[in-house]
Length: 246
Length: 345
Image (cartoon, rainbow over all chains, first blue to last red; front, top):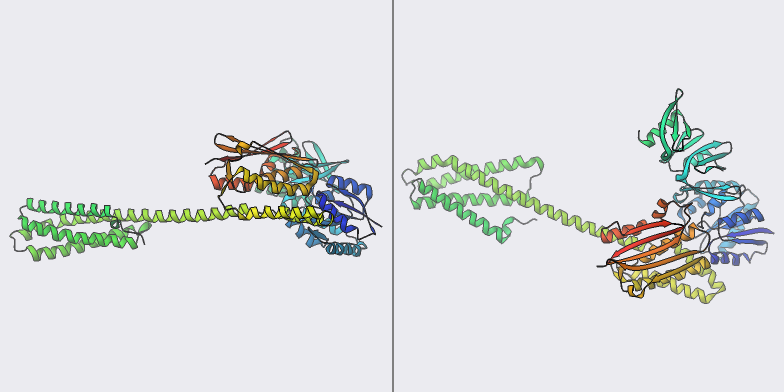
């Protein structure tokens, strides 16, 4: 018996998936969820083997929800239209169902999942999330988990990012939040005209900088509106000058 | 090809009168210098007829060849050259016709320089006027072409903005119908009907067509019914419009995208129930439409909110009315309000 969760904000969309599931007695539907928050809770509670996940949902997208899970289950995406997402799916060979889909197509997706279940699909999911996060609709905010709460940070609220072992510390006026990503990930996905990698361990929001002072021999230091000082390396100083048009 | 100034009767009359005045002046001056009336008249007629030919020639040339930038030196040379030819020809003809008058040869010889300068000045004036005329004509044609091109582009753009069918909406609606077919076939049938009527509405309306608020509300209702099937209890709408305002006019297919935007914003920015309210009133000869939706101020900045899908509406209003102040937004205490003003013609 495999455990299943359906996450979709449209009740009829969930009901059709549920209907198609009835043909598969070996799959047990644990819960239906309205949005990513419910989905996250249900996944932690039931530890499903497979989830059906919509992308455009209230507050957080399906991708953002997956990013918050340490070890995401297998995913079959169900979506109507999203050119970036579809490109990402095709690149990473994860199955997706384009709405509306029929029983036959649904059965095929299940068969493919069963076949792949033996191999780990986790890496593919990670890569998918990496490329999906570059779509323009997703680089306007960062979703993090803060204890049991989910925090959505609009990027303009971010002051700077700091490397911290396997995590990145996202500093905002409300304090910092941790996200299990690399600095390179943020360097690639955030708007390059607003966020500059000023140092190996720092990415700074240029809109927050009030001035840049020399510091020790080759280095500089950026002083933010909040008074925080962010190190700027020699190459980082070059990048900053370029973006600020100095 | 552009028309010469002489193609307009008014200018032709002015031109002829000027010429006659010149002839008369010429004759009187010569008579004043002691030439008998008969000789003066022959002299005046010959010189001025030839000058008239030169003028027409230069006007005609400029009609096909308009100098640009530095080519004005060419025009100067042509004027000079034409004046010299005119002088040589005039001198030749006058000598043949009037040599027998005593003292005429001397008078002719002495007046050559005056005749030359006056003709050169006149030809120059005619040239300048022609250049100005043809330039202005060209400018006008250019403007007309530009306006035509802009109009075409505007129509195409309006068409595109209006036709922007939301694939997301369409596919999700089809998916809902798909789900209803198995469980509630009657409802599925109804939704197919609504979706068809809605799609037909987007296709059939002519651009720049004005419709009454009542018609637009009927069309909106189709859309709202479909969305309510899709989102179930999460979506509630409230239309607060006085019947007196039903006959106010607005461009076709403007209201629905505004409401669609509010619904999307509300549904995707909050997790609970979403109430969309619609108001319409008449204020200072404007139809004012207000649409409200809930939003979460913590996650959507006002900047992002204003840009949320309203750009194409803003653009359409600009193309229709050439004004940028018709669309406004307001965000207060979890309620986002979109306000659109439509001037009543």
